[in-house]
Length: 391
Image (cartoon, rainbow, N blue to C red; front, side):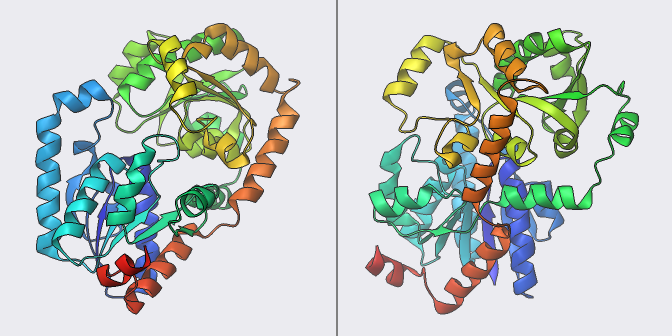
């Protein structure tokens, strides 16, 4: 079969590459064409455009690059129709992908599958109308989404498990926990590691990393501060943000850092879930300008109580979230003291991680998704005539 996939950032590239691997294992004639990244490219097929050419986040960056975004979107829509795949598989990135879904739905019988559903339960819930109209099959990786889509909006979805669980478990299974080797390979002093995961976008790094470092710097005598650098951010940028601090910057070793870390300061996103699955106590840090306004909007506009996946999956506050005006050097430092070894909040957080892991379920998400997709496609489920009669 012919599969056209679209992702818009590094996490999507990772998840889509594993899905492609599982599709190939079940379909010897699998042919891929995609907007994606290097991990997807390694699985074979044709890379039409790299996600780095698509990943503009925030009002100002989007406005400045609007012409490029619209050009890429138009070219993508045209390319999907010309290649005429057996299925279009969209991965997260809703602003771009839902527009493509609408176009493909209106101009072709190509079934549209969405892997890693848009997080409309937190923001822009009105998009459910677009999803019901333009998406044939939705594959969720968060257990609480089942009640949201099926219970609240009467839109049937498939919960396949969370691929991050597969990725973390595979890493731990294949890599021994040799701290001495880790320290030697990276020129570390051998002190316990305090991990910093400050996001993958320049603005969030500028907003969060300096405060995180300042808060953690009081522990430099006992711990080594290690930054898990984003692959798309060059060292010069980090150098300017950190202004000569003693933080060790490591690229391509996020899982290795978490494997050896005692605690972590983490911005929101998939990194909070990865940190929890490595059983590393964490403080979620997400500063934004106009903090009081953002906090007000969060209370009155966002549909969910939490921003971290750990708390969302658990359904309660397992990790402390310091967001907008709640994030300060003093608050970070106070929460960090509670989760470091000997802290009075460390044991409870680790117990909360176990509760969260139970709710995520078993490993095997990419395999389950691939098997289900092929079964549906071979039965013709998801073709426009079928799906429209069921939605």
